[in-house]
Amino acid sequence: MSELVSPRVGAFRHAGFRHYWIARFLANFSGQIMGVSVGWQVYDITRDPFDLGMVGLTLFLPAFLLVLVTGAVADRFNRVLIMTGCIVGEGLCALALLLFTVTEGQTVVPIFCTLAVLGTLRAFFGPAQQSLMPSLVPAQERASAIAWGTSSWQIATIAGPVAGGLLYGISPDAAYMTSFALLAAAAAMSIRVPAGGHVTGERPSLETVVAGFRYIWKEKIVLGAISFDLFAMLLGGASALLPVYARDILAVGPWGLGLLRAAPGIGSILVAAFLLRHPVKDHAGVIMFVCVALVGLCIAVFGASTAVWLSVLALGLMGGFDMVSVYVRETLIQLRTPDAVRGRVNAVNMAFVGASNELGEFRAGISAWALGAVPAVMIGGAATIGVSALWWYWFPQLREARHLQDGA
Image 1 (tube, rainbow, N blue to C red):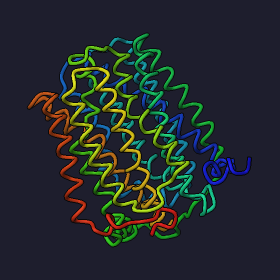
Image 2: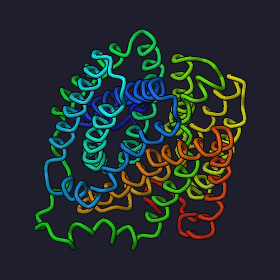
Image 3: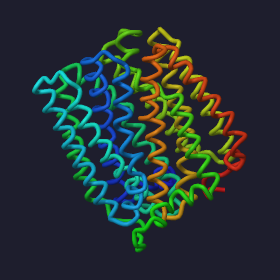
Image 4: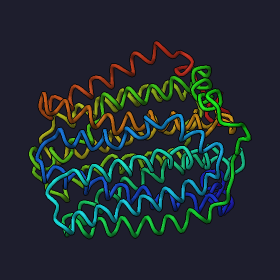
């Protein structure tokens, strides 16, 4: 029995990490339900893919504009309270979306106002929860904790979109009410997480605020890992266009949209389970580059597909390859970052992740509006492959990264 809990699930022996993991999972699960519901609702009202891109931009801008503030806050104040307060705020956003739906609003302006608040809360939530995680387990179990922490998001992406599609198919009210209930449970769990991690005693100044940027610029592996994800997913992201594929190309309706949204998560969690049993032991950098190139190939296949089974398979494989990239990248970043600047480094990392996701959705929406959905997705997949090739040559330190346990 002892072999079952070490090292694969050793992190769960610590109550603080268990509460953290559950809170993070519930919050992300709720976010997936809201994501499916908002995307379908906006497209239902406007029938314009440009507005789907604006959803991503609205969620991304707060993290970008506040990147110098959110990380400093995570390093200076209680990370548990920040995490819990943001979850409570997201619950209020779910109630606002429910109110809009109940009153049968036919303009998307209130939705975008709510999304701006939601994006601001997530801008503070990301660095706090990412920086908190390594302090909840001993150093020798951090790689396992990072893998499990990443998996909590991936598990949510499996069940969340399917649940969101089913709930929205029943009624939008049910989707937003469920999101609120999940966030309430997440807040109850989050407040039980022990306060941990370094809280800097530095007085706020321009020098302390930009310390995260200075560290990233100096540590080329961290710089390469963060920027690699930014440009690969910024150019290749296609999730914003899934409502277009579900309604107009594959004709599968809200439930099918949930299945498409869930497919990458299914692939991710299957690979995550494999990685927990068989972690990457050598040539981590090379493996990451190859997997990102394969992500681009899967995106291109999905873009060209008109068969539901092939579309789901391509998205599932994409999620699996992306999980390997995320696992390697996040482990390298966390193990190579001192706790004193972890909040500020994670703020930059989360802003870049937001750029690769939300801003990538904006890019996809604009491209689909100008070129059509299918060309936009296929060109994005090819661009991701190109980014993988460029970063291979531009960041040899990242390519040559070997072991994850010690960050070497």
